[in-house]
Amino acid sequence: MYDKARDQLAASLACVEFYASTTDIWSSRTTEPYLSLTVHYINSEWKLCSSCLETSYFPEDHTGQNVANDLREFLQSWRLKEENQVCVTTDSGANVVKAVKLNNWSRLSCFGHRLHIAIERSLKDTRVDRAVSVGKKIVSAFSHSWKRQRALQEVQRDMGLPQHKLVTETPTRWGSKQKMIQRLLEQEKAITQVLAADRSTRHLVPTWQDIEVLDSVNKALGPLLEFTNALSAEDYVTVSCLKPVLQLFSSDILQVKENDTDLTKTIKNSVLDYLNSKYEDPEVDELIALATMLDPRFRTQYMGPEEIEVMKARAVQEMESYVSVQSGTSDFETPQQASASASDAKRLKKTLGSFFKRAVPDKGVHAMEAELNSYLQCSPADSESNPLAWWKLHEINFPRVSRLARKYLCIPATSAAFERLFSTGGNIVTCQRSALKPATVNMLVFLAKN
Image (tube, rainbow, N blue to C red):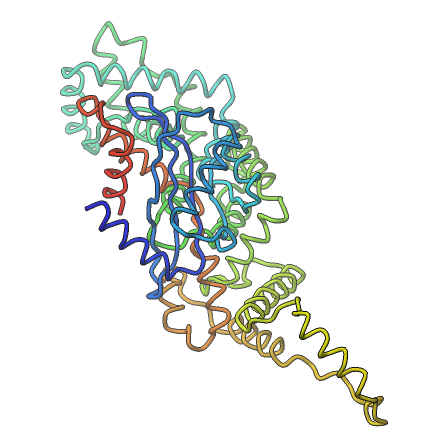
């Protein structure tokens, strides 16, 4: 079964011109380390595809050089050309970042991890620490007592509150902390009544100061939760949304408002400053801007005049390089060709008219510029539409630009695909199946994800 599935995937990848990838190291329940690689590409039907290629046992030291060598071996085993890899999306792990750098690959930092770090930094405040600590104790008090859970349900019915359970925080997921805070604020009255009725839990009743702090945090971070979920998808384009999202953060979501508390203002400014600083790298900014321009929903909507011209020049340059490669032009000549051209030069004499002859402009470049300008002048697609569906319909009208779109729109904005692979691996290597051999784990994960 594995061999058949692998052959089918290899046949599909053979038809793929450009691809992006995500990679990381994870540990099974038996603490055995694995290095995995997933690829993302747009097929001939303009469908965004994601495939797990390898889940390799990695007992060596987790140095950047070792990771880099194994990743190159993965690509070679699947006959994928490194020059066709557009970008690698990773988290901020030092060894993986170094591996990508050693292989001279372009890298995009996972937006989800960046946002998580930005939020954790912004919440380093003693008031927040105390309020969150109280909230965690409240959740623990209810989760370990079915009597309190039953009492909470009764009070919820009496007060007409939603029949929701409290949410437990996961330290590595800022969203879980935000969901916990939202649920505590939603059920504040019911929680207070249940805790106050029991002498052993009266000390857990949140004070008005704690509620005020939690409310300030909720107002600052609540709107960000949906963006993380939306940008973590695998089945639709996300990289082109990064630039619009960052601008939306600056102009609306994280913009300080008059009625914001001082704590809310501090959190908003801290998150925004960190995100802006991490996307100032010229190479990354250019990559994101080009992907945005190739998305028919946005095009140049979020760019200034100078940036538009730079991106247009970059796009035309890439399209021109594709034509050069396809036409088979080469900068090298055979000895026979060199000698023939030299002898022809000796025989030919310049005519009088040759002195007045002007260089003929390159019509190919003008055609590319015209095609790009025609695309940019089209009316934008609906913001909720699928950009790949638009390109499927208009590929025939913009053959060169569509090739660029197929190249850049396959890049994932986050490494969420890899986080899901971790979960799949955890479901396969369970405590009852801890003796699975690494080769078997590789095959099972491959079959589960493909």
